Length: 129
Image (tube, rainbow, N blue to C red; front, side, top):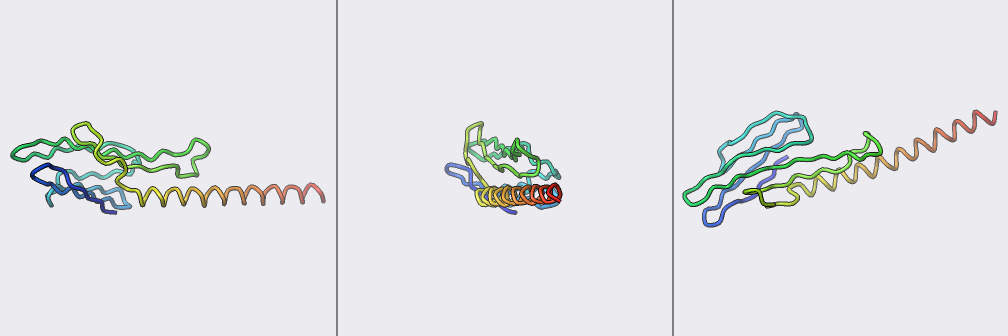
């Protein structure tokens, strides 16, 4: 998955973020790699600094996948936020992924209810025999 955004007032800097399903993370600024990481953790913070002639930008990418308390089977919520110089810059960098996770959560909820219903029905049939 690839996401990008721009930072800067007079001088604009393009930030590219590339995540792979195998845990590889690459962060680029203006086409140059500034951070490379391999992580399968659904949580964490990635930090790097962008400097130009006039400004310095301390960038922090916060990644959080919060599973629901009711069960580890349900994916819960996913959010990636961008902070620049400690201030919120982008509140949700991956809204399409967030929608997919919520849709998957809904499907898993329905599936678990159907499985539970089926198990109860089988138990009742065995008890009535």
